[in-house]
Every structure is written in C-alpha cells, then in structure tokens.
Image (tube, rainbow, N blue to C red; front, side, top):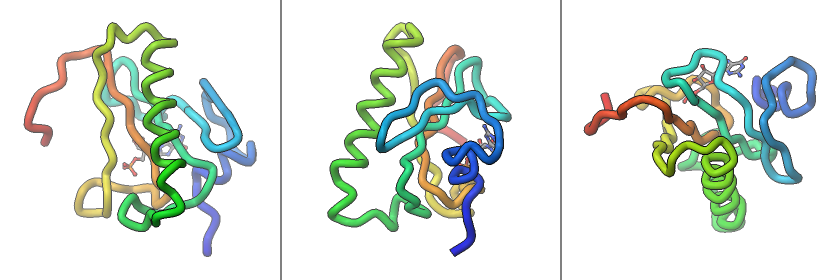
Length: 113
Ligand code: 5GP
C-alpha cells in the first residue's frame, strides 16, 4: 500500500503545524483552512476511510472524538465547533487516511454543501 500524505506528516517526513500528538493520534492545522480554526485529527493507524474501520477500531474512533473535544477546550472555541468526516471521493475525501475535520470560528450553515 502506498504511504499516505498523513503518514509522512506523522513520521515527520514533511512539515505540518502540529498542535497535539499522542500514541494514537496527531492533530494538525489544515493547510487550506475553511474556517478560522480548521484542524485535522488523524489516527496514526492508517484506515483509508471511516467505512473501512472495523470492530477493533472502536476505541480508536472514540479516542479521536475525545481528542476533538479536548482540542476545542484547549483552543477555547466557546463550545462551538463542527466535526466532519468526508467518506469517499464523491463526499469530498481527497486524502485516503481517515481524519476528522474540526471547524470553528465562523457561523456554520446547515445543511452543509
Ligand atoms: P479530505 O478532503 O480528504 O476530507 O481532507 C483532506 C484535507 O487535508 C484537506 O482539507 C486539505 O486541505 C488538507 N491537506 C492536504 N494536504 C495537506 C498538507 O500537506 N498539509 C496539511 N496540513 N493539510 C493538508
């Protein structure tokens, strides 16, 4: 399997603005932010898409959500943010290494585009 862009960031082979890291995950700033705060919460385990996750990933997926909440608290996002997972190219996924987008700092419309 080809090494993903996010694996290269995790391995520090290419630079990124890293805001948080632990054994299971890394949080970086998105290079092309769609909101004043736009973070990517990325598992170190390579799961190409959310729909590829399996039962054994349950704890990891929960961990990513908790990291998102902690980042919102750490960055003082006024308890106001949105998490997005694009699953598949037709849903806008461009990097096939699962990640959560955390968006905040502007009004977020519903339904999303
Ligand atoms: P997706 O489209 O797969 O849901 O999200 C991929 C995200 O990765 C996009 O928002 C894109 O801006 C971001 N991205 C792509 N290349 C890089 C990069 O080299 N560094 C960082 N920090 N973000 C990237």
